[in-house]
Length: 147
Image (cartoon, rainbow, N blue to C red; front, side, top):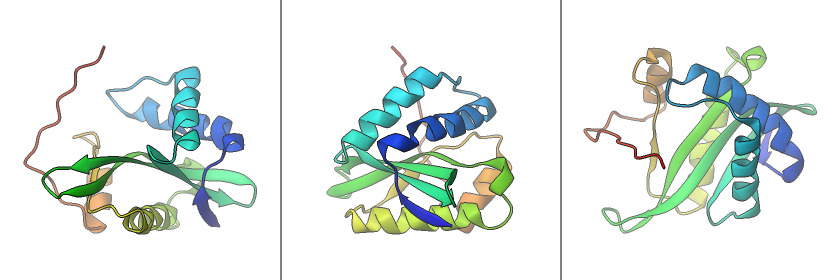
């Protein structure tokens, strides 16, 4: 198993993973064309973020997306962890932990001072997973305005 940054050739595989993820999440609907375009923009613009992929041989078995912004509270770069998914065929063997640990280390190397993520409020397994990896619930409540 290898974890590395994604490239253009990975986009179809990553879009397939996002279809699995967005089928599970209440706020999103899969749209392969939109997902492929978003993935392309991130891969082509590393100042926006990075996508890490987990490979088992030639198979893309997982991904995590780190997007960057500046926190005025911390006075520096922070990351938003988006779209973490391990393909169901590769779960329960520690792959998710390896992918998340790689993302945390990658974010630190990029100079990030914090990682923020969102997960469905009813996804207690995901919340426990992230808490086991040092994430804590925030007093902040996310709000969205979609155009």
